[in-house]
Image (cartoon, rainbow, N blue to C red; front, side):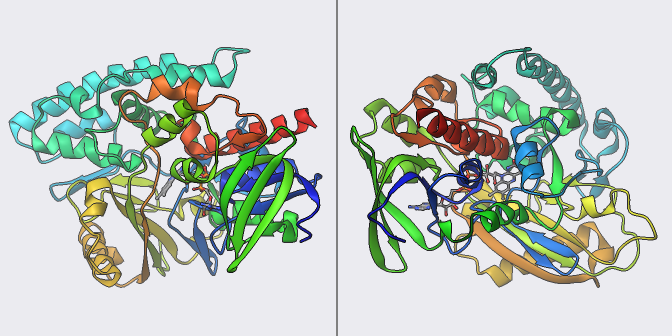
Length: 450
Ligand SMILES: Cc1cc2nc3c(=O)[nH]c(=O)nc-3n(C[C@H](O)[C@H](O)[C@H](O)COP(=O)(O)OP(=O)(O)OC[C@H]3O[C@@H](n4cnc5c(N)ncnc54)[C@H](O)[C@@H]3O)c2cc1C
């Protein structure tokens, strides 16, 4: 590219937030700088014939969401996840049917644990109901105000404080779901943890769709429309504004570049944004420092079964005290509305999060794959002969989870910063929906200013 021309905008980061911003500005003179050799960031999947393996974000917001608009405009097909979201394997028993209120009576538990699961379950039910009231959109309100309300819900204590002193089985059962945030229950704000159960127990409330062909299809479709304006292996090193515009420096395949633009949209993770953007207000720098991302080790599992399997009807299975905390049936959407018999094969995704992932730091991928495979077969013996591949991916910065006290930062972290516009999931709590919405909002501000 001719680095002497002045661009309308440079978009730093080709994850979902950056790609959505670029998509909305595709009629303008823009470029996208992505440090990796592919777009998508934490949306990572690969096709395997009619199946796909998935290592990152997998469930997306439904109709009426900002994500939905980008899916439609980019011609990306998403299907409702039909499978059950609340299932559990504990102490050798797998429950994938019946109401969750029946679980305390059906799981093999000591009397103590059984009573505690009933009382904790009731307390959680009430908290989820309260959360639902707080999270209910108010007609005509700015989504940012709703976000502040949600962040503020029980933000002064951790999920572990909320649980209190409960027997190990009960703690592990709830932890398996809450560590899905990649934070430990002692770190994650109680309200945020309760929000997880709201999503699992109330399918309408949010993340409920899978992308056919795998999540990465979404960002790949947007990248295809942008063509060579997307620069891969292009790591931004410096973004700075002055009164006339923005200067962005980056290294692309070993060569240094610099460009001037009217605006920059910085859609990198919080800690990267903090490092590469010069001159951010001090309170904003401190807020970016507060954001935490936890680690994951993810196993994507390809299967080649030719007949219906017992996991066909479920999407998520919590697996406390296994080598992984949760199993997702990432091929579940392939079964939605399936006619003419069950298509061959499928794919599963399992993960270890937070401290469980840290504990695997020195364990080779092959050994982790073996542990995952052994536990999968133990839960579902039908998997013994149909697992074709287990591919491990490690995320050092998985998802950003609201820590206790996160709500106090919201106005600081979302403040306007002139010609540099921040985007990314760390600006809110709705993961891919926050990424898409903040990317769209940044693009809108660029348009409004020019
Ligand atoms: C295992 C896992 C499961 C998840 N499950 C779900 C789910 O089911 N539903 C859901 O909604 N969300 C889920 N998430 C979270 C979701 O994936 C993220 O919220 C979302 O993808 C974040 O998008 P983003 O654009 O904000 O950030 P990212 O995807 O992190 O994008 C940032 C981009 O910036 C690039 N970058 C970094 N530094 C530089 C630099 N110096 N110069 C240029 N580029 C740079 C990165 O390579 C990256 O591509 C999951 C995440 C993980 C890891």
